[in-house]
Length: 227
Image (cartoon, rainbow, N blue to C red; front, side, top):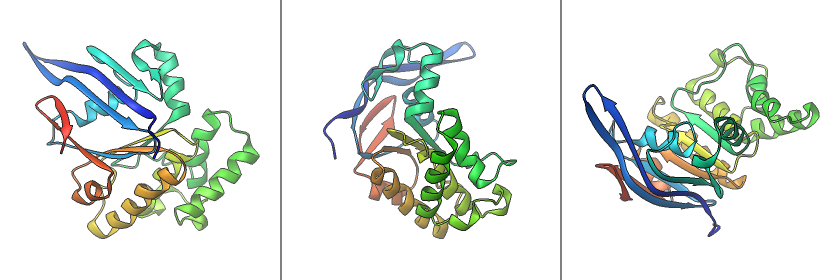
């Protein structure tokens, strides 16, 4: 694992107004995640895991502090610059898969490659390699509704990695799967991003994900601490 920092949070705070009151979700958070590291983030529902992910992804801005990803200060980029940065350097895996139902498996993977200007011939090669890696080489022309939940999540993992992101963010990636299916998907998620040189950060309630991670961080009372 590299000693280079992939994610740095420096004094990050975030508040939300709820009616007449204000709720501080993150309160002066400091944390560093190294390149190539697999970090699990845990906390009760509403503790701020999704807020933290949105800040790391540049989807939202902190009220105070700085967020750095791969050396880039997201708080100093314009909305368009953050969009382009996210598109090129980040991959996402969600609890509910978020595959485009009207596109085939091949087309779902090709969509992010097309957004990043990858030539068709190269894109086809990348798609074939990734579908083989996730065990779905024979399902390239299937639509998502023809796949099981575990198969859809494997497609989602392949899609997240298609454009070779530096950082993969997974938000409760096994929360919609049964226990047996979770184990297979988790093994894939734990290994494949790092084999392809990506840093992996997972927000999860899963004890199994926590056991596989290099580190577990806990969000509680607006702070991020070692579990």
